[in-house]
Length: 139
Image (cartoon, rainbow, N blue to C red):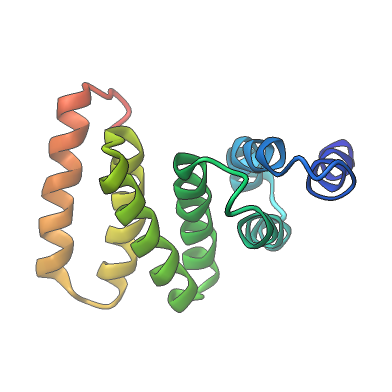
C-alpha cells in the first residue's frame, strides 16, 4: 500500500515523473518476486506513457526491459517484442553496456520463443561477451 501511495503521488499529484519512473524501476525486482505482475505492467506502462520527456533515456530503457520481461512471462509476445526492441536500441545508442546486457537477455527470450535460433545465438554471443567484459559474476 505504501508503494502504491508513493507511485500515485509521484506520478499523479506531484507530477514528479522522474522520481516515479525511478521508483517503478526499483520496484521491478520486488514485483518480479512478489507480484502482482499485472499491476507492475500497469504501473510501467502508465509511467512510460506519461513520462517520456521527464525521464532519462536509461530509465526508459530499464522500464522497457522490465515490461518485456513481465509481458513475455504473461505470454504477451507482441508487447514483449516491441518493448525489447526499443530497449536494446536505446541501450546501444547510450553505450550502456550493463543495461544492454539486460535488454539483450529479454530480447533473446522473445526471439527464442519465435524459434529464430540463429538470431538468438548471435544475440546470446553478444550478451555473453558483455557479461565477460564487465566481469559480472551473476552472469
